Amino acid sequence: MASAAAKSNVRIVQDTYEAFNDGDIDSVTAAMADDIEWVEPEGSPYGDIHHSPEAVLENVFQPCLEDFADFQVETDRFIDGGNTIVVLGTFRGTNRETGKDLDVPYAHVCELEDGRMSRFVDYSNALPMLQTYEM
Image (tube, rainbow, N blue to C red):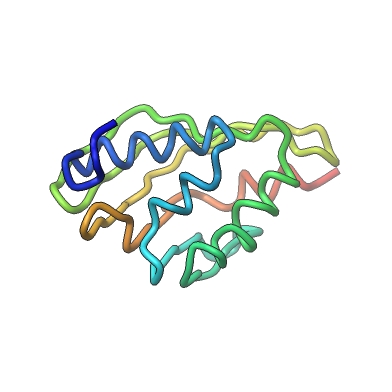
């Protein structure tokens, strides 16, 4: 496997999404800078700005995986902007309490420094996700 320095930023981001969908959360958090700024949309159940891999794990990944069965971050397109990679795709899963399906398009902007994500912004509509919680 190539070192992070030898990989393109697009490949690093692609590998990170694949690891997440495979359940390899350790690889996902290892791809983050120690001082990552992770932005989730206001109004989302996980909406806030998180400032470390541990904060992302505790406040975004763990609750989301607890809330949704078969949660996946499907990717449709990676747009290479050098140190900024844009990812277009769809969140999918089923709310464990209500049984409602999640099907929410997103755009993610990932900024990388030295082969690790230093900033991540999730541009998605929080309302469809919130509606999966309603009985």
